[in-house]
Image (cartoon, rainbow, N blue to C red; front, top):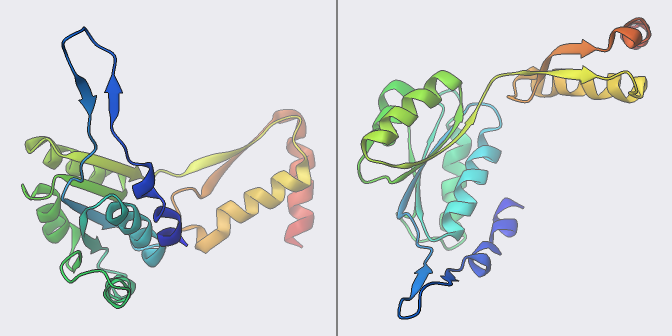
Amino acid sequence: AAFEYFSQLPEQISGKLYATTPGYFAYSRREPYGVVGAIAPWNFPFSIATWKTAPALAAGNSVVIKMAEQSPVSTNALALACLEGGVPPGVVNVVHGDGPTTGAALAAHPGVPKITFTGSTEVGRAILRAGAEHIKSVHLELGGKTPNIVFADADIEQALAGSLFTSFFNTGQICTSGSRLLVAEERAEEFIAAFTERAR
């Protein structure tokens, strides 16, 4: 689905002509980075690798994917599927290893002008520092779990169902997991009663 969705991207990439002083011609032209380094986490390994690879390819780049060492197998399957689908050899590449060595080397490599990273805030800071050395384009999707907030006018059953889903989906191992719950004081007792009933 990600590849199908991003297959439309090449038709949407275009430059722009800017109004300027007579005698001058000003325009922008979109060009591929060349190589995109994609560093992905251990949760949702195939999906996140695909979400990073498909748009990079559609924009005319090759990709070097570094998956978390805890979940490397599905990335190999993605690379093989790309080959079987007609992507030329060397366009989708997979490297294996841990973050402090392989991931850091990919982020710091001068031949990789674009890095996309999904993971912790601490590592995101390190990738930004590495990117600054070569003035790379860096795209970060960082962790940090946020609360579910239940306002006074909320539908309690719907808020409870949503809170339980986001807290326990994928055993809570997602960056959007609502690991805390903030409920408006005037609805707290009602929410707790509904939660207790659901837990039974």
